[in-house]
Length: 217
Image: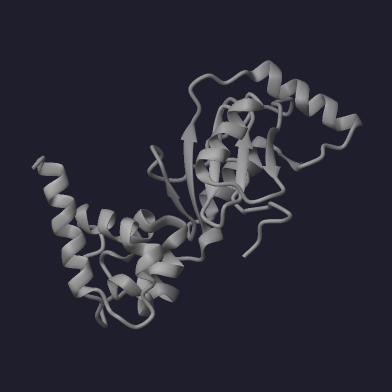
């Protein structure tokens, strides 16, 4: 038997035996909880001193944290150790951004309000400042921390950061595909399924808050 499969089966069996029975939706959570146990990111004991693994476990479970934290016995730590799903997001660069396409869509939207998304426009200084200040937000992906304010080299004529927020909830894979289709260079997927596409003039992480009109907690 391949070693990876064996490890997965061991993790699944361990979870099936050890997971709390009350409130644990095994039909929904089995696959993701087993994956996180296999990565050993949800295996700690919470006590009066805190919960050393809650942040990493919340990262691993993503938008299933609220539904599946009971399966790893960490729901009691949720208010202090893991923010609401709209306060967690994953950000990734896109492989083939098309700046000219994104800017063209922004120009068209100035005269013809878009259907299906809204546009956020932020001065670059504000974009960097708000992300640096929002330390309660947990950001995943290849970027391990929020950008520090660095306005050197910026001037009054620096173009603002423009980002697209899709109105409806999207899965992470659909968010990536949608942002690729509009020429964005980064996408930021909030764990409540709100999708933000960042344009080429964004220096940091775009808007720090989920602003999808039909995708709220």
